[in-house]
Image (tube, rainbow, N blue to C red):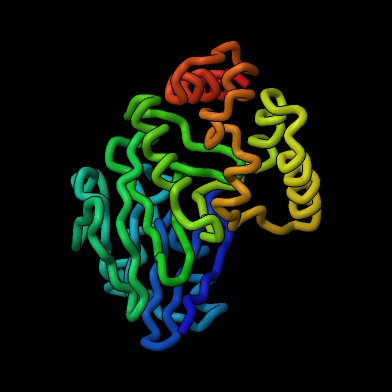
Length: 255
Ligand code: ZN
Ligand code: FE
């Protein structure tokens, strides 16, 4: 049976999301920004929390773990490299490991850069990816613990997923990301279409995610650092994609 998902806002601009296997009743929260909205989503769906899958150690992704685990006795799965910074971890995972949520299976993809041990959960059978703060809709996370080269390599791994993979990310940053992307690619028609669509979604109180890998390839300037026109737009024609990515990321930090 296909996975069901439930997306909901948390904190200031975070998203929480549940993934549910109706065959077994298993339900995982992808990250736990805070407990109350997760509880509200569980109540609304009638699902029972069995697992928390953690993408990285930041507090806005882990702050609800202790309270949720205390109440639901759920399993906490976290990146191996960050287990010491995440509360109440039961299992740690690395690149290539598989995580079961009932009969659903996620592949673990290491996507460091935002943090040194950040991981993405890819439910390939359901064409779903939970990218935390690595890939955003029309953006990417700040490179805090890694290098631009590391982050670019992580983004390439995600870009290589099947184009129809639906991507859930950790924050609603889409409109600001689009405003920035348009400073570099003012004539990108896919980006202009996303700008219109996202403005309508936000105006009607809807989230702009999930997005898809194909949509991001077309509109997300951070995934387009190897497009010659993007390199030229930031004055780095002929330079490596990693160098172009680093420059685009640096400009976003100052935007
Ligand atoms: Zn983060
Ligand atoms: Fe975050």
